[in-house]
Length: 172
Figure 1: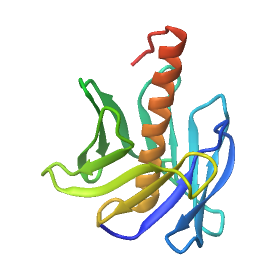
Figure 2: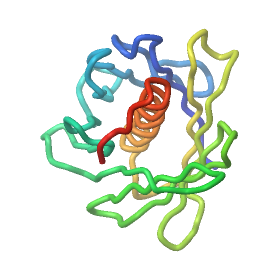
Figure 3: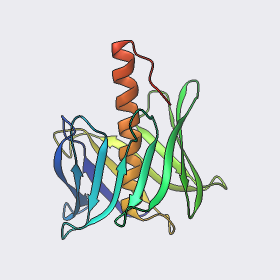
C-alpha cells in the first residue's frame, strides 16, 4: 500500500481538522460544515477546496464533487448480513466496492476487477477524537476523493446508528 494519511472527525462533526501524513506533517484539512448537515470539504494545504462530499436531503447516499461542483461519484450502502458493504460509483473510473467484517474497524476498497486499491481504518492513539488512517495505491482516485468517500461511509454509519438508537427507519 502507498503512504498513509490520517484525518479525524470532530466530536460534534463541525469545524476544521487537519490531514496529516505519516511524519505528522499537515498536508491539508477537512472542513466539517455543520453538526446538522452531512457535508465536508477537503482542502489542500493552502486552504483551497479540492473535493466536497455531502448527503442530499432525506437520502442515505453520499455525493462527491470537485472544486467546480461537478459530481465525481456517488456512494451508497449495500444490504449485507454479517458485514458492512458500500459501493462508490466513480463517474470516470467505474465502481468500487467498500467492505468490512461486521465488527471490524478496517475497510477494503476494491476496484471492479476485485483488486485492492485502498484500505482505511479507524485508529486510536494518534488523535484524541476518532481518526482514520487511509492507505492507497490507486492511480485513478485522488487521495482527496478517497477521503470524501471515507467520510461518506462515516456519515452513513453515523446516520444508521442514530436511526437505530431512535427506533427510526431512514429513507433511501
